[in-house]
Image 1 (cartoon, helix red, strand yellow):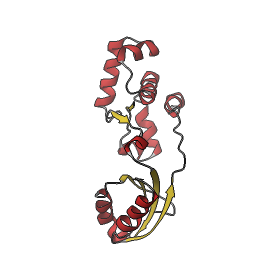
Image 2: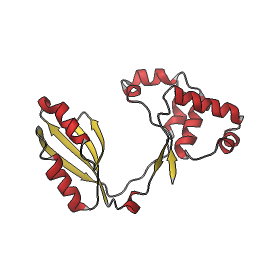
Image 3: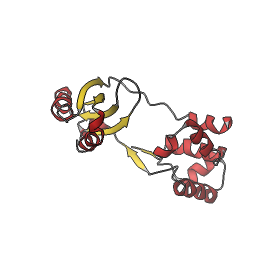
Image 4: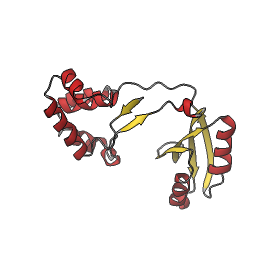
Length: 178
């Protein structure tokens, strides 16, 4: 079980310029700390302090500061979904009637199998992440639950065949560029 530790706040992504300006408050050690915690949120402070070559009390203070500044939003776990019976994951693109924007969002939040909702640019208005037991379950979720929401005009489903999660190397490069 891997603990994941970093969730950047929604306001961080208002514009790339504001995002990079906000990063100027964080030095190379902060970025290395975020990288290491993202890789293994379960690592102990003493082990991490040795790995980064700094005093454990300094490291603990840095972590507390990053939590206080809301860069680290919460500590969480990463599960093996297949062991829990989740047999299929998908992204679903949704086009909607703009008049129903708020109502659609509220109704999507009520569907237990939806794990994320993103308003996007491009050919869809919304992209959602959906977990299902199997393809039949996914079909029922998309057709019977999502498709019947008033204002949903059409959907397109993308079934995840394989997923590779990369290391968050961008964290180490951001500080060097600013």
